[in-house]
Image 1 (cartoon, rainbow, N blue to C red):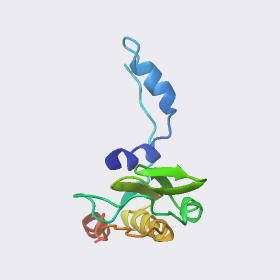
Image 2: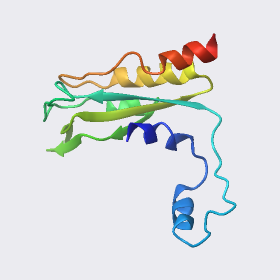
Image 3: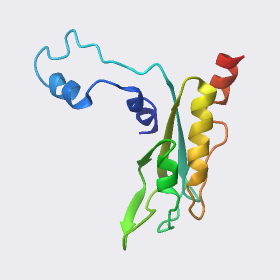
Length: 136
């Protein structure tokens, strides 16, 4: 879920410990997860035709380069003959952190631009209003 992809990278607590505590009676009572103060922005890369239909089996390149800047979450991908290809409408979520909304946004888009596949679509307005409001 793209919304979760923008939240979990900010979590500094051990997620597994929190999940294990959540399934025991009273396990989360008093739990105070630690969060990074950084802002997070996620940009979704989608296949041609999404959301009505989508292309599949398009070779994806630039994943390693993008991972140097941001976290890349696979959603609609598959491995074919040792290569990563598109296999769904929402192909990848690219999440970056930054000290300001603008910094996080710039990093997310810089990382997303490293990723290439035929028919790649991405919105260019993600977090634009947040940047305007906070940094105005």
